[in-house]
Length: 245
Ligand code: PGA
Image 1: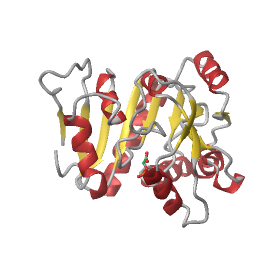
Image 2 (image 1 turned 135 degrees about the vertical axis):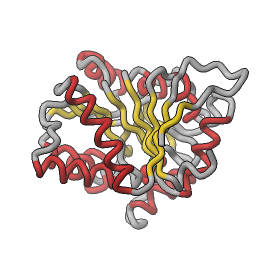
Image 3 (image 1 turned 180 degrees about the vertical axis):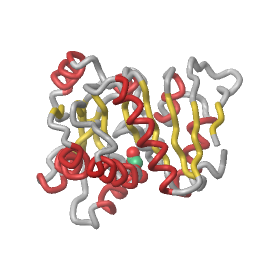
């Protein structure tokens, strides 16, 4: 099922946001993979921005299967990191996680690592022509990458402190073996410069925040609302996440 969402009356939006709601995890992963394949067919050397987290796991598994079967080729593409913990032991770094989950199995060799030198990261990203497609997860508190509530629409790549909620969610991801306190993140403005954005949303725990991001006034209280100002956003949601729409 696909449908367009109209902006709320009175809220400025140039956006033309599309939502694809899928019925099973396999369909969810296939829909997201097809979106990515479409971008890479048009531009094999495109830069893709890759998120970590639980949400993209079925997509990444599907991409690995397709790459192994020879039906998906991202080996000529370039990869940019969306965020990274600050002062994390290497085994918990997002860089290592993405290399194992995505880049090595997909044969992607050209990777832009995000560091606390946000200006240099953005300079290189610009020489690459920016991200043709930025994949994103949706934080339960409405964060995008590590742009926590309060982040400005014109924020750039920088170091940030994580909220207690986000730190706890990340600690849970690592089975309590590592609790991050700080991170570097692409800023909202940096993310909104991508040519296209694919927001990945899965599971009942995200139903409330997905509804809020589409209904609340656009503003820093819920950074995900800023995506409504972008002209090319697709949301791939499963039925559980779309339950409140
Ligand atoms: P999750 O995180 O995919 O692990 O739910 C999403 C996010 O916090 O951006």
